[in-house]
Length: 82
Image (cartoon, rainbow, N blue to C red; front, side):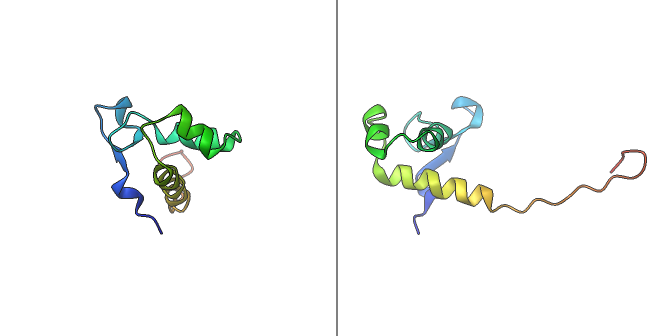
């Protein structure tokens, strides 16, 4: 498994803290949206020459990690308070 943490950074100074490929201004969300739209890896690499094939893999592993996060339900009382 690829260590996505070595390729993806979150910096408040870049795109308000959105996840980007390290050393670039290419947002992970853009790569994921392109893949979801059916854009090939080759097309993505042509569009963003500062990224590599392992960067695309890292974006996918990052998304998988986020999708695997546990979400705890918030219990509210009858008044809508936590």
